[in-house]
Amino acid sequence: MAVNSSIAFDLPPLPTYTLQPRENLLDPLPDNVLALLLPIVAYWALSMVYHYLDVNDYFVEYRLHTPAEVLKRNRVTRWEVVRDVVLQQIIQTVAGLAFVYFDAEETVGREEYDVAVWAQRLRIFQKTIPSLLALVGVDAVGLSKSMSQSGHTILAGALAGGSYPSATQSQILESGAEVLAPAFMGWELAVAGFIFWYFVPALQFMLAICIVDTWQYFLHRAMHLNRWLYGEFIRTLSLISYLTATVTFHSRHHRLYVPYAFGALYNHPFEGFLLDTAGTGIGFLVSGMNTRQAMWFFTMSTIKTVDDHCGYEFPWDPLQHFTSNNAAYHDIHHQSWGIKSNFSQPFFIFWDRLLGTQWTGDIQQRYERARENAQKQVDLDAIKAAEAAPAVTVTEEREHERVIVSPEGPATRTRLRRKTVDSLKGPSHGVPGSVLHN
Image (cartoon, rainbow, N blue to C red):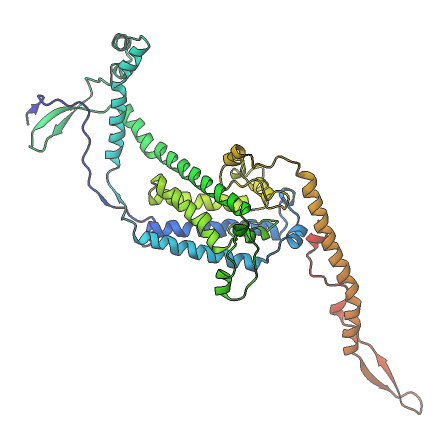
């Protein structure tokens, strides 16, 4: 077919594309449903790792608090924590499923086209280079010729305004005619591919992080400055009462003076929805992420939140060094003396620094005092249990007294023999040895 070169192209033409539905990562589970389930799996998987370390006293040298503090300072049982977390995750999943119902089906097939769009933008930028250099007195055309003679043809073409005479391609028009059109250079497609596949997603991720950090900082701070939003937690038995009787929220989370991993999402259900679910949802929508990106974002946000409440300060944990907001930083906020500081969560602390809410006082003596007080309470409980143990033993022994007839002499006499119960040899205080000897 003859090539018609009479048609002028200002830019390399964009390729055509055909859209098709994206295949699910784990068929038959839809990707958008998987994006809701992965954070829950990550939450409990990582939490159980830290819980295993807790109950087996591993890496005690990196713990922020002693087992005695966990036992004496927290004002909520582990069962209550699990109950509230599961309830929040149910609400979070239901809200996500409602959103998924209205979510459009994701498609693939235009990735090559999108990369070419970025390559076109690079070519357009190159066309502005001669004018920009002229502003500072540089002859771009002369410099381009000099570069071309030196063998630097790519740099010469860029300085000349994106002129690459050797880069051409055949293009079939809708009429069926074949024409000669400019083509992209290899470096343009490589840079465009990097922008499309890595740089833009990284920007989207950072934008979503900034949105979540901003949302949670100001809402979190408001919950501490407003008495109604902070309030006091009331124990209730009825589920309806549990959800409606207490309309003040954030004090519930602060019943954990000594945070642990699976208590990260221990909140009032409404607070959990507003602070966590809505915050990450807004970050996802505003940043324009796709579902695959949402899987990473939702899961990493969850992992970061769990890590910030884990109760350990590991020197090798990358999440504790990537940002200044880590377990040690957030733990200060959970203490009675640091509760009006360190509001930032879950990623960066720029709002604390900008608005002067970052804790700057001494913490070592405060932590040591809390450890000593908790240990004294545990020791006192052990003493009380030991003092009460003999009385229990006497009572039990009397229940096992029996009468034995002894035929000694002409008269029958009776005597009492006491049977000792082996199971009551020593006090039983119900406190693990690791607590008493920490």
